[in-house]
Amino acid sequence: MQPTKAFVLGLDGVPWNLVERWAEDGELEHFATLFEEGASGPLESTTPPQTALAWPSIATGVRADTHGIYDFQTLQDNYTHRMATSADRGGTALWEYLSPAMVGNVPMTYPASEFDGKMVTGMMTPEQNDGFTHPPELRDEIRRSIPEYEIGLKWTEYADEPAALVEDLQANVENRRELMRMLMNTDDWRLFFFVYTAPDRLQHLNWDEDVILEHYRYLDDILGEVIAYTERQNANLFVVSDHGFGPISRVAYPNRLLEREGYLARASDDSGRGVLERLGVTKASVERVLDGVGINQTKLVEVLPDEFTDAVARQVPGDHPLYDVDFDATTAFFHGTSHLYVNRADRFERGTVHPNDVETVKRQLRETFESAVDPETGDRLFDLVDGEDLFPRDDRSPDFIVKGREGYLIQSALSDRLVTETGAMEATHDYEGIFFAGGPSIAANTRVDDATVYDVAPTLLHSIGEPIPEQIDGRVLEEILTIDSPPERQVLEPSTERPSSETDDDFQDVEDRLRGLGYIE
Image (cartoon, rainbow, N blue to C red):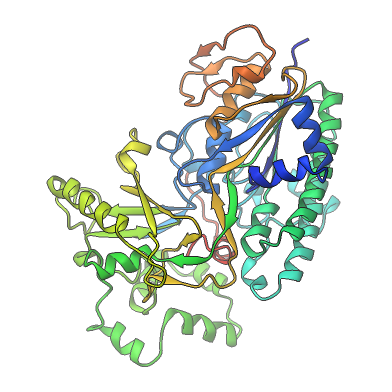
């Protein structure tokens, strides 16, 4: 009988090459089982291969120009930004089609949606508040049953303590496993979607294969538990990662290239900024002073109006990619993890590029970036992908995605150098994640070589006999399924109440977590 249930086990940042090698070597017993008894292959990530973009793509099956989340922070027309939340997400997630559903620790789900089932939000959740769970009383159950549960660790604290990171991360993932077990304590679900973000966090700051393998053995043990559970539930299982991972050797700063070539101007020092800088007053020094006198920056920012804190940020010198730029004299700027924008007069408040000149500027930018080299090695630094090609349905998408070439991590700060050493960072995202499937609808010992993150949702739906929503971009991986009937496309409406776009939460702790991993400046 065809199953009516599906389980998604998400493993953030797990690369195909490591899992394939270690499964073949007998190190990962349960992954090896899926190789033999199910379907497997690399899973191509989004462009860029980034958590905030990829998990909504997996959950909805649509590209960013439909679901609308391009990065952890949403750029505003006045050159400020705010944290992206689930309210910013378009498209329809699997748990909004399939009910009841159990959803745990999926990035970009805060604040929790109201639907038939349970949700515990994941990465980008500021604190264990009312938006942390659905229903709200689930939060109290977690506090009673898993009192040490944490949303995420503050990675800035581990730059010089890799051993402490491994130990604390293990405790964090063990608590996450207890949450999974709590949600497993029912048969009343059609979709179970649970993500472990620990491998990504570990690998950013520790690319020692012995350490990684030990962590993957624990993930393999979790997988064994999930396989046994899905067999009892007669459910199909999908094991996916949002992107892969690989080592880095250098850090490159696109905003430095833009400044050097005359596209970007820093904020002028002929105002109070220059006086402050000569007196040693910078953003970094202000933060140190506040810490030294015991003033909690989080609470200080929380009680001050956004307009005031933005104005102060613009006056105190530093290397912020937005607050320390003179946009009246800037043609193009880099922001976020990979995003290059033309300072368009028809989009930004202080835009300098007339719409008729945008294509000329884009051509010049491509030539500039594709000819940029590491001054020490002579290696090319960047590749560019046109935003119109990647995101044709959204005219407010980034103009380019900037890709660091092999071994180069990109960061957005206003650096005085084009390339620097990596510091605490040892590895970053790449495009080849993992895809595994098993269960009653999955053909044994099958290989798929061209699966993408957009294919997970439609394949899952068809595997349990559900129609495919018309808006989904991905394809059904029919070659891995034992189902004879072709996929059916329909216009479907979700049965859920989306969260409000307004949120008053303070995201300072979230910013600290992202900053420690190099995601924001």
